[in-house]
Length: 392
Image (tube, rainbow, N blue to C red; front, side):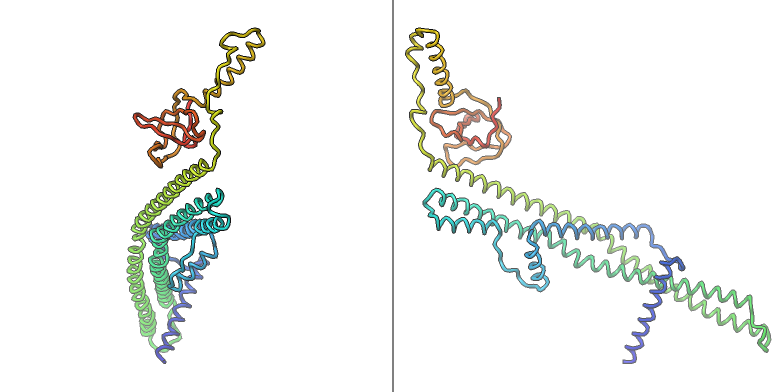
């Protein structure tokens, strides 16, 4: 118990002495030992790494989970070392609601069938999102947290120890300086009231001051050694920030790859959904009138010649309108078209497309207006108009 009390009193004294030294340095009343420039640069780079890692981590968490309540729940489960219960994504919930609505309205109705189709693809999009969140958490968020909660805590601890060693060193320097001043003062003003011989008095005073100075210099050498050792340890840890940057670089590449995979899956699912919706709309659309698809007959009056100028104009107008209809429905002249997006053919009657390629397109009588016939070399098949940009 006595040992603990003495140690507590000693620690309190050291703390008080360091606090006085720190305060005097801030007030400009005491000298401060400056770190070398290389160590200062390492400390500045480490502080920047820590600050930006915290910002990137927080914003990535917001990107992956916009709901603040869900983020707080994840934080609590992580601190308690418990597994977070499985939670459906928003897209999965939306898909489930659509399927439930279709069951109520009737899945055999056009609206119900479309709800089922869109709902299933929303579930697929939600599954892709869930996989993306899990991959991003494991390959990106976890390494950033490990740095902040592991490596950075070690660095901060060693830096605090280095600061304490520096304060101890400056305290010892101040003591040596005061001891030298006391020695000079004792030599300049000896005690002449002493009854003993003068040389004896001077010798005793000088010896006492000299012992105090030697003890202060010994403490200074010990403090300097401990400071240099701690500065070297801190420098080695701070130089490891370069390895941290390389590790975070690989994590960024993994995160970017996970994003690319996720968006590619979403693009693929939405393409499939568009094809399914086109197929559903074609199935429920009324059949085209055969009269509308048939070419307009040529007027006999136009063939035999008009009997009057007014009849000629009337016949010419009706013939022009018929020609325009025929141009839209009959096989037209080939035009060039630029493909806007990738498209995967669903069956043998369709033609697969690649973004930015040029193909030849035309239409035929009775064909769905949302589709054209596309040709690329010896390949030919139907292509959706929405994926094309017709060139003049």
